[in-house]
Amino acid sequence: MIIGSHVQMKAPLFLEGSVQEALDYGANALMLYTGAPQNTKRREIRDMHVTEAQALMKANGIPMERMIIHAPYIINPANSVKPEVAELAVEFLQQELYRVREIGARYVVLHPGSYTTTDLETGIRTIISQLNKVTVPDEVTVCLETMAGKGSEVGYRFEHLEEILSGLAQQERYGVCFDTCHTSDSGYDIADFDSVLDEFDRIIGLSLLHVIHLNDSKNARGARKDRHENIGLGTIGFETLHAITANERTASVPKILETPYIGAKPPYRQEIEMLRKGIFDRKVLEDLKV
Image (cartoon, rainbow, N blue to C red):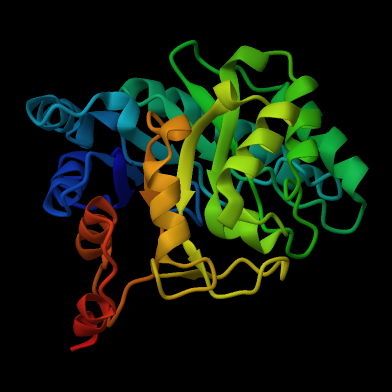
């Protein structure tokens, strides 16, 4: 089972500390931001303990493609209303992609964005236009994330992502990140995961599914709100999420937890252990509140 979580990246060890945090959770995959997700300030790669992080990954038998990088959420390639925002999306995404290549990671998860005050079709056309201004390095794959559909978000239907992917000049450098909370909130019945995978395969193609964000949801299916919940405590439920982790069709796809802290403590070691065992224990999570 290839499973990990979002981890921090902070001084003094930076990436090396991120890998160690993942190992402390019993993970064999991880996801992180290369800097604060709400701004464009970034440290020099030479200061981020890249070599040490790579060595720690190798020593524990974890290939670098299981270090997933999440693009900062200030990047909104769907915004055609504010030219300065659109320009920032292109420039900063390009910078991030080169940083990912230097780090040695492969997959970058990117939110398709929100069209704000225009309309869905304009948003999709804008995403295609903006992404076509970016050069994705050969060693990197950008994964567009399935979204919940709150507000003016693009990407809450597989058809949106397929239309975007089909319009890109570098189609071979793009794929998809499937978020379980978002996909359920957008209306898909992921309790029947194989049927959802069949639909995904028909519209997009399973070969383009590179990352799964494994999250429970606080919302009813179809609510289009995007509020993550801890594994087994939400409306999706432990049984469904465990079945997704154990599904042979996605066995080679890293599953990344983005569940909320409990009592200011990360729940990832406990959640990963329960998913590996296939046994849910609510008390294990409740004890984190103490």
